[in-house]
Image 1 (tube, one colour):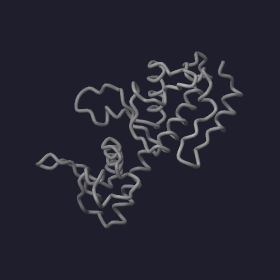
Image 2 (cartoon, helix red, strand yellow):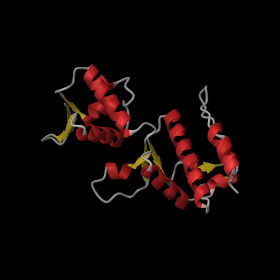
Image 3 (cartoon, helix red, strand yellow):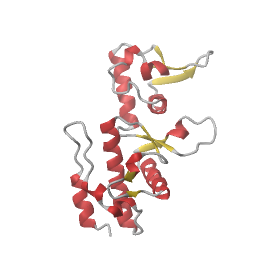
Image 4 (cartoon, helix red, strand yellow):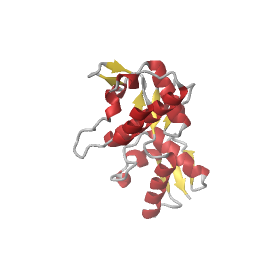
Length: 198
């Protein structure tokens, strides 16, 4: 059983490595962690632990997208156990519901999304939007136009936290800026996506 005392201790046991290797929390070595728990209260705590683990793991490794069918984080070879796919879907829905992830396939969708890949928000969409707006302000780009691709891998964006982020994350952040009336997203006649900072 996945008792409350174990969960309480495990919540405080998550530690990031000082060196190069991610240090998995103690609860990652518990076989019940890899089985979706039937009791609603225990399941809620289990999903919160997974949410915390995924966020810290992805932040540590600077991972933005995880694939529910392939992500090695869902397998612990030393047990050997893995989180079943149905549990991964429940976890994904929990992450999306609690604003810790977006369906990457929905953000990028031109067709019906498959719901296989998650865009992990180890920083909120609002925080990513703030970083982009701060960069635009510091570089006197308010009133100017930038390409979306330039934000992802352009020379001017090098060294920024958002540099190298997937298009899905950049678009979600730009959509947030557009909601705030701080940006306008457009597509040029050549098909390139752009943004004007306001």
